[in-house]
Length: 153
Image (cartoon, rainbow, N blue to C red; front, top):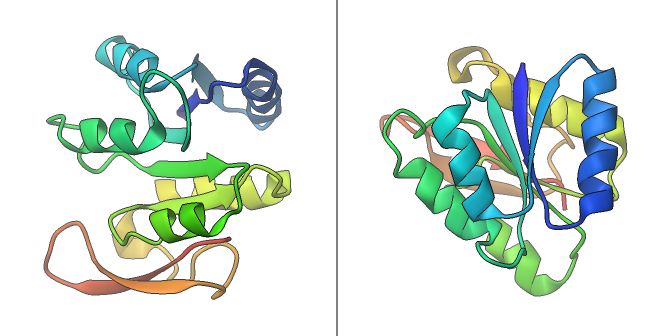
């Protein structure tokens, strides 16, 4: 599995790369959304993990750009952030987003999110990693059925 990890903090990027490589994953790194989009032009990835707030292009803009790129509309996308303020919590409740986890979360929680989001939707468990702490109703990507997504806040 190849992940694209996007974060403006170089130390965090390198730490997460080492952790994910130790878990058997290939990891590409980008410092911001623009750099991530350049990497996506030349590399196939199975999932994106992106910080929310970065210079040049933040995670929200990256998400919109990825979703509007043919062939990447369903690419699993997990947001991470160190921010735990009400504005951030409100922003990630948007039902379009696949998931959110705090940077301070334990590594097993991140690994659960990766496994969950890379499992095909039709066979995914109905309860997302982190339990039922914060549920929102959302339409599935096919627009035909309704599902519940839970975000770990």
